[in-house]
Image (cartoon, rainbow, N blue to C red; front, top):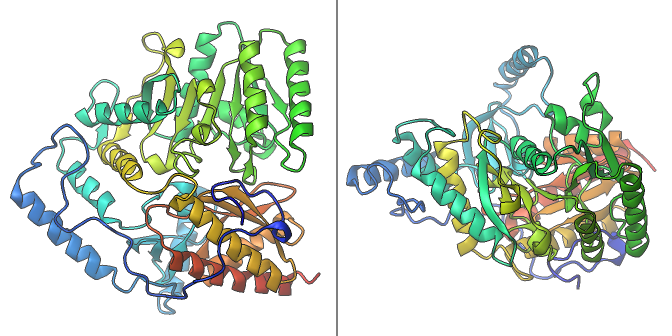
Amino acid sequence: MLPTGEPTNRSFAGEQSGSRAGIRHRRHAPSPHTVAAEEYRMSADAPLPFQDDPRVAQAIALLDQVVADAGRDLNDVRAADPTKVDAYRARLEEFARLRAGALYYPYLATGRGHGPYVELADGSVKLDFINGIGVHGFGHAHRAMRHCGIRAAICDTVMQGNLQQADASVDLCRRLVELARRSGAAIEHVAISTSGAMSNENALKLAFHARPGRNRLLAFERCFAGRTLVLSQLTDKAAFRVNLPTDVPIDYLPFCDASDVAGSTERTLAAMRRHVGRYPNRHAAIWFELVQGEGGYNVGERSYLHAICAEARKLGIPIVFDEVQTFGRTTRPFAFQHFGLDEYAELVTVGKITQACATLFSAAFAPGPGLISQTFTAGTWELLAAIEVLDRMAAGNLFGPEGSNARLHARFAAGLERIAERTSGAIRGPWGIGGMIALTPLEGRADQAKRLAELCFDEGLMGFVAGAEPTRLRFLPPLLAIDDAMIDRALELLERAVGRLVAEFPR
């Protein structure tokens, strides 16, 4: 059996991922929402307005009942209502005109959902295994997130900012620092921000600030960091910076090759030394995605990552761990903890599943006044939701070699192996780790992966493409709102879509 929690970068033929026994085919799974009806007090340490007012508790209970009643039929995928299709199409076309481009999926939600199931305005119901590309860790309409929203709604302002902050900001920062320091990392400070991209921008500012006179960055081939002006330059995808100025020189390194870890380690070190030798004392940071997301769920190997980090430390180049997608999805809260890189954690970014985003940093990168500041740091709901997410993670069983993240991956990988066998190898993989799963369809061409994503959507399953040469289909299930039956249902829908893909692309 594949050790649970270990990354999967091999072909199905060599996999024995998870048990094949005891697979259930239950369509109408019970709600994954585990918050008791009377549980309305939030996790934040500081008291919230009207925290103990019984009328608030009564109002929350009534709203819970309204949402529960509305979501009773959202327990499986459903086709669109024919009477709504034309109006829905017109709505999508209007939105495409307004935003100067069509949506990737014809997806406009009603606001009704239940766990991983979400209703669209055409009456269809989708099994959402992409979740805003990893944002909705509680899935849709989870009671815990709703309670955060209700509490936020009766606070005095919608947004929090650098000048005026809520008590909850203290609670969130303390939790992040404590979590990051759990295995010895030297993280001491947090800057809350409105998005993962802004968290990454702030990390770059701190790195450049700490290394005055340096203007270059080291990054890895196939990396993705965001779409701001600077992050578009850092991201290894030319299409994201067409006609944009390139003011920050980026020197790219080959990423870990799981089929040749020792060789790829030497190649990366050689490239790193070559860049640094050509531009001595010019690199302000080296940018790490420990698991490449947009790049295709390429997983770094422990010895490789340690060797590259050790070389960066030796050369005096600050290390940035971009955990906007990986946070919460491996066998530890932070991927740097999963790989045992705590001694190198000095600039770390989080986002997506955390709801509120942040840059974590050691004392060596503490900024001067005015360097890091935003009018908006987060919405009040986002702050409360972030605290709730962290507390649920701490109290739950997501982590460890036998945690739910590892078990989810093993079950999904075993299901993908069965699909590969039944379709004569029409899919390959799996790639990823924990709550990050990807497969390569057919020859891995972009048109094949995109078509598989479309066919999955048509069947009722949502994933998203990643990578190039090969291009893959990836999944980010809602870690805090999922059970085995939902994974099995996703695999059923995926197998149907793969069958249709094979018919369209005969081999």
